[in-house]
Image (cartoon, rainbow, N blue to C red; front, side, top):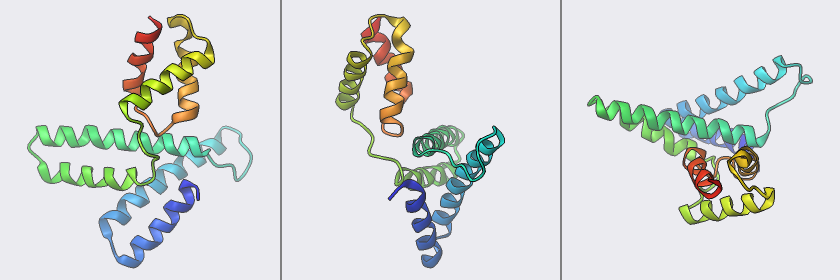
Length: 154
């Protein structure tokens, strides 16, 4: 079952169970995906075109990152109830993301991508990152992986 189908099933289940907070978060996810679908059609894609599974995972990853930043800001500002809400939304969003790679798994993935692209210098970093994004979207934090790639190539 793809992410859209799982999301739809979760939405129905949350409605039946009357879980207002969960339902709200699921609707936010759905809206973000639909916004990207509409933007895709605006670029001249065929009618009824939808964003790929990888794009959906990227959207979810961005949503998690935004909420982490918001929660941190709320905690620093002493607004713990708002930080708690952001953290609960993160838990709901993460249900639809694949399991995150551990530090060792990410390092192994970086090594494999470097070998696959035959990267030899920092100029090849873009190609390595492109391979990683194709294979591991939603499974790793590219903000952390970028410096790992840079260290291996530099």
